[in-house]
Image 1 (cartoon, rainbow, N blue to C red):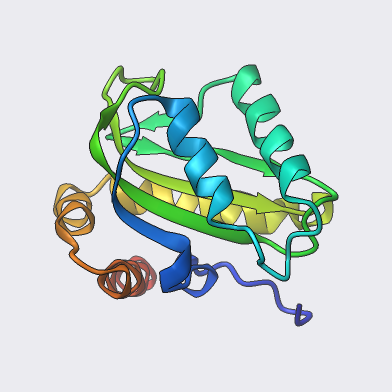
Image 2: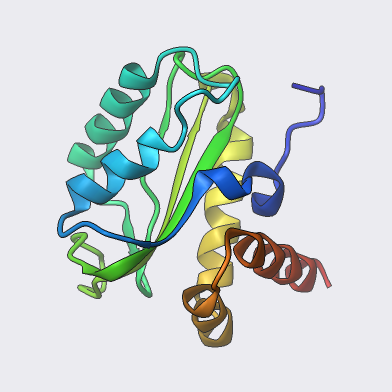
Length: 161
């Protein structure tokens, strides 16, 4: 990883780490599928340790942050850099969200312990983006992984503007 840590969500994602209309009827199934998308990523040393860290974090407090967004995340030594996967779900998923709204957008984020500030910036950025109704609808209406990345890029540019 370069000395400058990536804080743009669109730069953390690649088409193979995105699923549209992800099937699954539970929070556990959706999180498992998102962790599986990280398999083979050069920034992940041990996928099962990542899975364990994500679920341990979820047990402490639900990462359903409201507005239909789930943000399962963890910091772990099993990651050598901050990585992410993203999905829209086929059906709304009960996530234990703070506003009791089922989740259809899920960003999974994992990184090493020493990337705490980067982690917080990314989580805050996706929360701000998804709080915008039009942006949320664009993500849900995206028909390709590339259009998800482009929507995120445009949204992040607008946040800076």
